[in-house]
Amino acid sequence: MNKALTHSEAAAGFLRDPERARWHDETLWFVRSKRDVAARTVPGWEALREQASRIKEHTLGRLDEYLEQFEQQATANGIRVHWAADGAEHNRIVHELLLRQGAKRIVKSKSMLTEECGLNPYLEARGLTVTDTDLGEYIVQLRREHPSHIVLPAIHLKKEDVSDTFNQHIGTERGNADPTYLTRAARAVLRERFLEADAAITGVNFAVAETGGIVICTNEGNADFGAHAAPLHIACMGLEKIIPKAEHLGVFLRLLARSATGQSITTYSSHFHRPRPGSELHIIIVDNGRTQQLGREQFRGSLKCIRCAACFNTCPVYRRSGGHSYHTAVAGPIGSILAPNLDRKANADLPFASTLCGSCTNVCPVKINIHEQLWHWRQELMKEGHGGLAKKTSMKVMAAVLGSPAGFRISGSLARAALRLAPWSLAHKWNPWYRGRELPDAPAESFTEWYKKNKR
Image 1 (cartoon, one colour):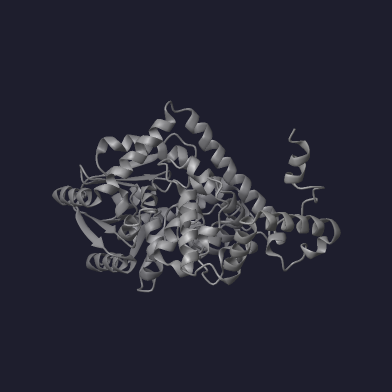
Image 2 (tube, rainbow, N blue to C red):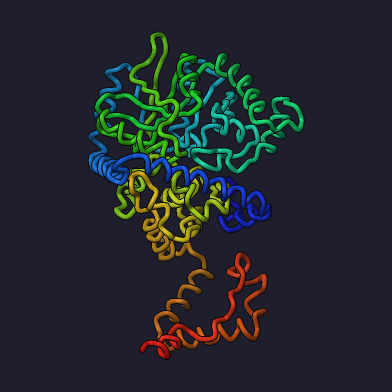
């Protein structure tokens, strides 16, 4: 993640390859369309969304009680529970557990929390070998990149890119971009990593307070393989992953895969309630700004997120700018709400990377009002001076124009005249609005003028 570039600057780099940008846009819209088809197959889909939203809202209101209940039940089951205030403490706990086990080789299944905490570079700097075993995560790890999408980590790459990467790092045939061949090659390497691993690290999709168990959803079975082959299993979860009862799982599992990829359910929905005989299971519950977000009335609803990425797939800005333009672990619309909570200054540009069209809110399976929260962040960031002088000045000018009927009429007349007589005054490289658009033809008259003539 390159924080030296703003979202707009990084997006401009992504768009320098228009063919790739077009392909990225169309591929993600295809996934969004699959979600719509899948949703229509479920009677009462909207009622299911409403139920999920209410369960999450209830849980957030009693989060302390459910977390304590989960810890008690998990401990009674033989699971060891740890608490981390932030990413740094999370990483230290993981490292201490690995040192205690004498673990040097770790296999990790997809976990956006560990990305958020920067776990991989932390462990690698201390001499440990970490292999991401989700195929997409493995690809971007070989390329020394971050995931560009929380469900489809390598969606920004084509099969030819993967072929070049595998040729360089695992010795596949140069130029062979057959997906089956490449997948089998990765499988052969990863199977060896699983078998020689000293420890497995996984994420957590849902943690059930009632039972003290966790549920991990994958399509590749890599979390299961790692957790069952290694003597040490460390599961890392944000504290918002808790749900009250096992009966609530049916609600979320019906929504998750359909919203994410259009599947009826993930291939593996694996339940872990206790360590295997002769092994250890540790769960690390991480705050890292979540309680702070919980205390913000306008933004607490973002903690309902189940990380399905439906908002990514539908967002016209994400689809056309790529995930790496967001310079944060969780990209897209939901990431643009979560990131400023952690660092306002570094992530002040992200809430503005949105059209506020509301499509993200429309597809969210737990009914988070994503576009409204992005708007609220804009107001806060501008008040705190994070918007920049140019944006602040332009907003003041726009407010003055739109707040004055006479000023609105005069500015409209001047703009139409400029479009007709001097289009070059707007169509130049110093106008950031023009760089991504084509100038429209100037209308002969304003709507007000047309209405006055035609109102009868």
